[in-house]
Length: 79
Image (cartoon, rainbow, N blue to C red):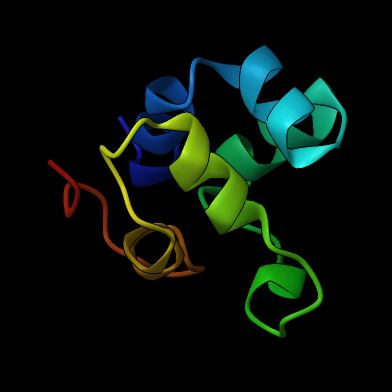
């Protein structure tokens, strides 16, 4: 299971995560397929990591999410 999939699951699944982030469920699945958050998360244009961290009820922080869900992050880093 990818790091991002773990984060999405901790946030309540794709539907809840999409609502929390204000985007479509399809966009969440695109992230999962890419195994990373979008580029805009790393350029400061969006704050999806904060929304996902909030929805995860403390299982992940926004900084952890950005680190483990960035493009090229290795699978299995998150617990």
